[in-house]
Structures are given as C-alpha cells and as structure tokens.
Amino acid sequence: MQAPDDFNAPVGVAEQLDDGLRRILAPNPSPMTYRGTNTYLIGDRDLAVVDPGPDSEAHLQAILAALHPDQRISHILVTHAHLDHSPLARRLGQITDAPVLAYGDYRAGQSAVMAELAAAGLAGGGEGVDNRFTPDQTVADGEVIKGDGWSLEALWTPGHFGNHLSFAKDDVILTGDLVMGWASSLVSPPDGDLTDFMRSCEMLQNRPARRFHAGHGAPVDAPAERLDWLIAHRRQRETQILEALSQKGGTVSALTQVIYTEVPPALIPAAERNVFAHLVDLYVKNIVICSDPLSFKTHFDLR
Image (cartoon, rainbow, N blue to C red; front, top):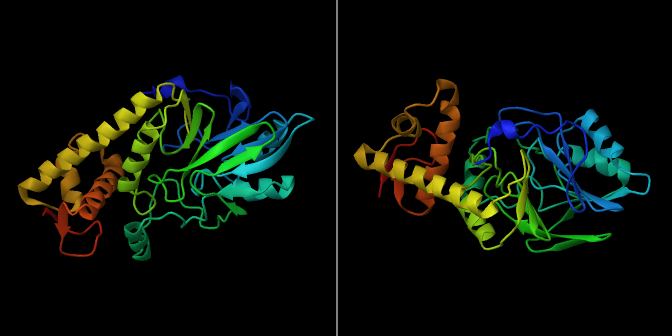
C-alpha cells in the first residue's frame, strides 16, 4: 500500500511519468483529495487532457502553460463528475475549442438502487457532485478514442461514481478514483455503489497492466497486488458486518459502533457511509432484509 508521505509532487508543474504521459497536480489538497487532483496530459502534439480538475484559475493557467509552442489540446476527457475532477472541463473547452468527452452527465450509469436513494434525498458526501456537468460527446464502454499518435480505450468502471470511466493507454490504465494507492477508494451511496465497485475491480483484474495512474496520489506500480488488496479489504469488512448482524441486527449507526471500535469520532460519519454501502450491496444480493425503505435509520437483519 502506498505510504502517504511518498507522494509530494510539485503543484502546477507538468511532470513526465511515461512515454507521452505527463501529470499536473491541482492546488486542491484535502482529506478527500490527498495532495490534490491529478490532471494528465497525453500525446506529443495534439493532446488529450484527462480530468481538468476543479474550477481553479491557477490550475487552468498551469494546464495552458504546460503546452509547448507546437502543441494544442484536441480532447478533454473526464473520468467522473465529482467537483474535484470535472468543473474545469467547460472553461478549458471554451478556450481550446476541444470537445469534452465522458460516459455521460452526472446521473449517467447510476444503478437503479442508487437512483432511488438519490430521489429520496440522500446525498453522497465526500467530494461533492458536479451536477452542472454535461459532456459534448458521450463515450461508450470499450470505445477507442484516437488522437495524434495516441489512442485510449474507455472502460466503464462504476463503483466510486456511476459515470466513472478509466482509460487504457498501451500497458497503463488511468483509473481515476476507482483504484488509488494512497487510500482505499470512497464508495458512498448514492454516488458510489459497492456492487458496481467490486465488479469493476474484478474486470480490471482481467486486464493485466504495468501501472495504474490514479486520480490522486502516486502511480500504482503493482496493479494486480493493489486490486487484490482492495477486493480482500471489502470482503473482510463484509464479513465483519455479517457477524455483527448475526447477533441482533441493527441500524447503520449501531453496526458501525460494533465494527469500528477504534475509529476517532471525527471519522465515524465516513465509517457509517462505508457500512451503509455494504448493507445496500447485501440487500441487493438478498442476503439482508429491512422493514423500511433503505436509509441510514433502517433496521437491518440477516435474511
């Protein structure tokens, strides 16, 4: 697992990571974004920008300053519609005349159960949803986007967010917020769906890659090991939840107190969201039941 202090990239500087791949760190550090959002530049002449990032004038100027005299931006790609990844896409597109490509708007790809939770008023927390985001062009799962000397295969990888795309370039994959090295990915309903998250991780297990470049933090140089860890981590948490439910069932809050016995009080809300994500997954799989509509206040029991 990536040690947090191992990643100290300079803010606003385009750094070469791989052949035809540079990274610019945005100036938006936080507990949810780590050192900030990673914006990627792909290509040597006509460039693709992946995840322009937050609506930051400083970051906009850093992206434009990274262009050499013979370079231009031809494509703007967005992994998902969280406020730390997508808002700058529109301004950058207006300046460069490059189209914005994504799986769809902020509601695209949302599972049925997450759509119901959102309609009931549940908010996802975390980074916040860019509910103004709409791409110029939608990209389908498996579609190949071609530019001047580069091509990217779009992989629909929901789990952290419904419209989440990863992008495969040769033997590296840009994984957005689905797989990161510095922390386990946030799966917070209704933005994130744990059933989808596990399925997306398992899909990536079947696509051998040399390296993952994530939405935050350092490159993941052992992709297979990281995926194994993420899946095992979630399965271990599921086992803990099932054991707690076998005692007498409970609400999200009650179950969280049983499972997260050493978590500081400030982190309890995040822990509750994680427990709820697992409970929804178990409910969809018909392993748990609840008498009321799905919510944080619902009492859950094993079927």
